[in-house]
Image (tube, one colour):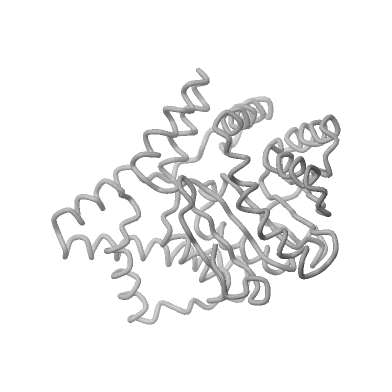
Length: 308
C-alpha cells in the first residue's frame, strides 16, 4: 500500500496524453519549478483516477493523503542548534549500525563501482551528498579497503560539525575517505568530471521533488557516470515501523524525525517522474530492494541497458 501503482500508471497515461511530458527546462530554477508542479499535478490526477475507480482504490488514496506531509524534520528546521543536529545524525548512525543498513547500502553500490573500475582501469571516485557524520562513506571505505579496491570516497554535507566529525572518524579508522563542506544544490564548487558516481542515501525525502530533480541534474552534469539514491520505501508498514524503531533510543526529536521521514518517503512512480524530468527523459531506473527504493540515473554507456 501507498505505492498505488494501478491508479498511478493510469494517472501518468492521462498526463502523457495531455502533453505534460516531455518537460522542458533551461535552468535549475526552471527545473525545480517544473518538477514540483508536475509531481503535484500527478498526485491530483491520481486522486481523480481513484475517485473514478472507487472502492479500495479510493480508500488507499485517502490513506496516502492522511499520512503524507510536507513538514520539515527537526534536523532541517531553521534555528536548530548544530549540537542538536549532530545528536540527531549520531542517533541515525546508531540505528543504521544496529539494523545493518550500511552493509545493505554498500552491497547496492559495489557493483556500480566495480563496473567503473572494470571499464576505466583506474581509481573510482565516489561523492556522497548529505552524508551526515559519514556512516555510509566510512562503511564503504572499510569495505573497499578490505577488498583492496582502488576507490576514493568523499563525503560531504552543509553542516560543518558533520564534516569535522566525519573526518575524525575516517582518521581513526584509517579508511580512504575524506569529508568536505558542500551544498548539494551547488555542485559548481567541484570540477566537472572530478567524480564518477554521486551517491545519496536516506536523504531523498528531505527534499521537495524540484529540489531532488536539481540535485540529480547537477549530479549528471558534474559526474562522469551519474547519480544513485537510496531511500525508504513508501508503505504503511514503514510509516509505523520507522518511528517505532527510532523511539527505542528514547530520543524524542529523533523519534519525531523518524515519523516525519516515513510520511515523506517517495513512491516509485514519483521517483520515476522526478528522474525523467531531471534527466530529460534519459536513462534511469527505480526499483524496490525492500525496505528501500533505489534510483539510478546513469549515462547510456555505463548503464549498458541493464537495471538494478
